[in-house]
Image (tube, rainbow, N blue to C red; front, side, top):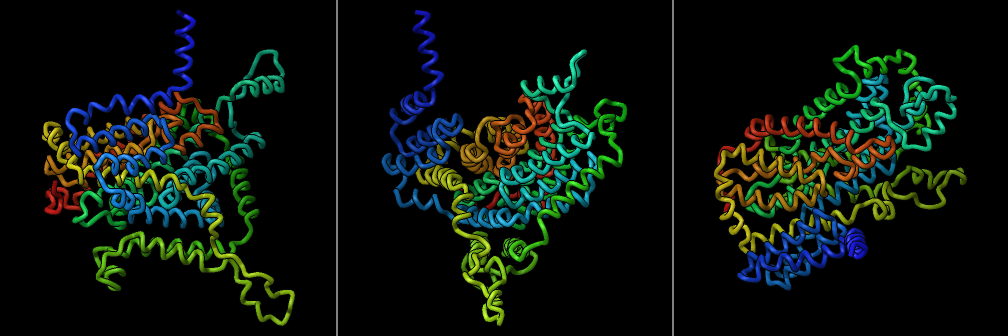
Length: 554
């Protein structure tokens, strides 16, 4: 019997995902089987997808396609209506923003900007950390958090290795064993998992945190932001929507406060800031020599890149153009460019696709001007490629995230059409009667805890539709509950599995999950504290959050 139990337990450990995929839908059947109404059938699909998303029983994008099957078959929503949810305006803005980011990454413009900023900020340990964090945060506003982290980690690694080779600082702890030669000690260290120094942990982890925090600063910086935008605008389609400029006015100040309080916390915890007599502070006293070595390395990397190419300049100009188009589409204080052209509603996706088209039209170099040159050797033999090619986009665009966003929008649309929204609203009446500040706090804490173990976008897809209905029951402005919760879904700082930037940063420095949780908990507390203090005040100035809007209806 003991042997059979062990074999059974081993089979469950190996095939638990398959068992979950098969058994979980059966376990959920009582949700609607005794009262077969559209609202409960929709709730069944929502709970099914939430379970698959949280435990990642299926790939997240594949789980997101379930509404395309179950909503039509269960009589919740027509196939045509479900299909439209997978390519809404928000999805097109996401695609446009990502293609622009891919162009910046493809021509290495982001790396050049990063190196120049780091060189200007300074190369002493604390200044270097501040420069790396600042660059990562600003880059992550416009490109994916994962790409921003992946760009910065090699720069950090090369800098720390160079400093160590010059005898200044250490990337990993070196074992000092009595009577054992240093070479043998190093060999033994290599056989085991290397333990990073506290300074190394500060460099790597602050970069991952900067990518997560920076992603909240701009609406295209994170999938959770776009999930919020799509669900909010789908549910409240009579409202003004989520405008690019207003998002910046609210979230950039919060981003900066969160980021630099996080830097202070991490430098206090790892680098002995405000603790001059601590071992951490004493290890950083590398003097001018270390700063010169780091500055020399940054200068060499810039020299290797060579002068700025026409492609980099053109992509930089188009990136700047995209920001201007987004900002001045509807800036409020003056008439936007879209209002001057047409009376039809023009959203941010249009601005993004304008720039995308230009990326595929403008050539990557100016050799065409020599087509009639008298010197035959200078004439181009073939047409130059555009600034960006479809092959590059096809390889680098995370297509699965489009389905993930679309699945969330399909859930929001079905919950409204089936009456599930009203059902949820009725059952949340007691909780919604709490003071609105505490409703927001509890919602954000729940989202922050859940996002440590699950995909940020998946958590947002589950939490935000519920908060939309709760806001209607409590007569609270939907923005007051939904935006803070959406931002909290990006506060995934505690574990390598929380979000890709954490895994990317943890791998090269062999940082333990326990150490990451200690530092990440402090960052999460800082982020939530800033959110609770700043959002109610600043949000009230940008949106009239004290008044329940007339366009918000059950």
